[in-house]
Length: 290
Image (cartoon, rainbow, N blue to C red; front, side, top):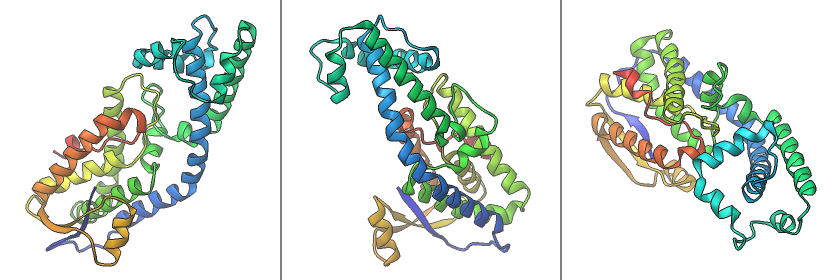
């Protein structure tokens, strides 16, 4: 990941209070939600995996309506995995799977499915991700706003906020304190909608300020294409520590070279991993900046 350190010859005059507020708001939301999301996701993921495995390995079992969409979507998107789950000689996934293989009574298997469905629904109702992240299959008006302030991890947050500061502080001075935040929020919502259009029916929660930040970067590129930026190459949290100590890999690049290269890396990353990670793509906002 590339992190901008400083823009040379900055002409900013206003104190960037909106940019500071956005960074602090994202940070506060992250601190308030991250640990809860970290606790929720593994438990819910395990229950979801058991539901899918049970449904795939027992085609005659009745899938409750409250989890039918989850099962049907997985079968449609991963037919090969479902076929493998039906094989009698497949590897045992975990202790639960080993116990299920010893049960031949259809009634007991159905009871297990019903119990798993109840657990999954209860966990989903209490999940911050399901409440406030953006789910393309079920887009909610509130999520177009809240999903932009949720982040999946420290590097996700730091990368977005660093680029927000690079582009946002200058654009706030250029546009003013009304147009700038309006553009940021509209761009974030538009990026989520683009994601939904390209991933229709997806149940994977999407989160992050990436779309809004991409729009700021696109606008920055159009307005200041030859601006020089000092950049550091970051490969992990240790790299950030090295930067604080004045170490690490640094170089200078003009905006018209750096920003498209970064954007391309995000497109490739999103294409490869977006369906599993649910991290908001950073490319959609560029269309708004042109």
